[in-house]
Length: 405
Ligand SMILES: *Cc1c(COP(=O)(O)O)cnc(C)c1O
Image (cartoon, rainbow, N blue to C red; front, top):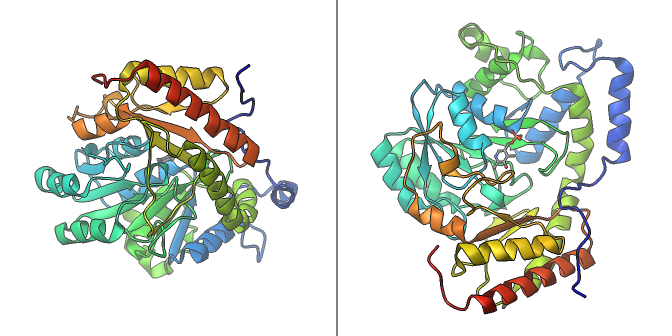
């Protein structure tokens, strides 16, 4: 009988006891709103901002309602006006173009390479052809582009870089924390990311004006003096009256369960990377299967793994995905005709003008993606890799010749 995996690809670790105790302490006070503080009390939300700023080395931090809200808010705070064009990766998740649309702007997609990072040649070309002044750079699935080269292109062209670090919390490029290359960075604390409060987002930047605007936008009711990772009050003097309140605050309950998790992040990153390497080991030297090589400069977080079957064609891709699913292994395929779950892609986002992205389409047609929750054991990882290896080999034997995608 064929081996089968019976675990869950969407089961995260439980919230640990420290975080549960911190949540209960907040609940007992009834002061869940971030600005509802007793005398002398800092509040969990302000403390979370202080902790995250310290961890990333950023001057300022703001906690908000979601990662998507964080991105839209930074775009607004940076002065995006209706109809402005904003560059972003053609391969990313729906909240990224969604944030551009939420700010009233229009996404301009940039091709991705077969290493799943933004294509720097196409970036330079799209900057020139679109006239866009902002890049919402998505470190999609934790793959980090050559950040020195990327920043050189954007700096030379006067393009502001806002980093989407939903998959790179805890990662670094050449020793610099992910999110610290651009003007600002946005993180998500949604359940499937690296720390879990159900929903939530974090914004970091060194730019005082930008942070003051994001704070007012997030709905600070002019109580910004209660923040611990905010610019000085004089920064708000003009900004406070010319910036609308678009409520999207974090609350003390979610902040309370996030702070203990931040302290565990480094250990968790190691845990993800061990799992990543176990699966990767099992997928080496399989005919037709191409792994994504991780550059030496990239300290990544292996909370998911991607691999390519570039010569398989659509029917064989589908066959691998279905055969793995029958054996309990949930692979996401970004090349299917219709989005399933989170696999929507640029041509699914029909609120934006259609754009030809032949290189990205080719990459996505052969790309499979899998989550690696920390609830998987080493045996689980090795079994999953063995099942994928079996099914890729079997499908490869049934389809020895390259099909047109
Ligand atoms: C999850 C995610 C976000 C933000 O998501 P929210 O659900 O709004 O917190 C942003 N970018 C990417 C690539 C993501 O996967």
